[in-house]
Length: 183
Image 1 (tube, rainbow, N blue to C red):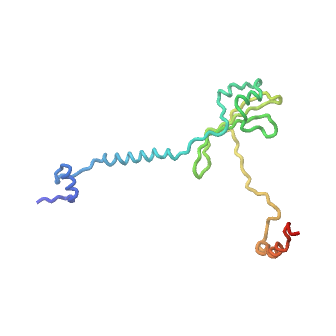
Image 2 (cartoon, rainbow, N blue to C red; image 1 turned 90 degrees about the vertical axis):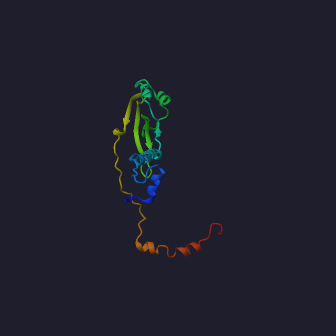
């Protein structure tokens, strides 16, 4: 007498699908693989929902606008009407205008991700006529090292004894002074 090696529930499930209980039930690998692949694709597609949008910052100057500025001919008024107000001007004189722009993306818990940074420098002569137009990228910048020293402020150093006993006697002094309206 032959015995079935499968459990009763598996035999019943096979019988319900029109199979005889003696045959083994095989599940095709594709039926399990397809839902897992679909779930993985949905998870990967969902990652783009968490990206922050690219934000344009500054005054972007196009190449067509730069082509309209002719050194030796264009004046400050021409440049301002064409490009708008500068993002920054030179510190000590009005000999240079800077149009700074970049694309940024916020990253949670970190600094902004800066991409496509561009600076257009318009240099003027003493009479206000354009002398030169330069396009500067991120590679033209210079790294500035910050100084970690602090300027000491005199009178703020307190010893341990001053910190512990510094307020003794001040409480009684405040109660003896007349208020401005009591004089």
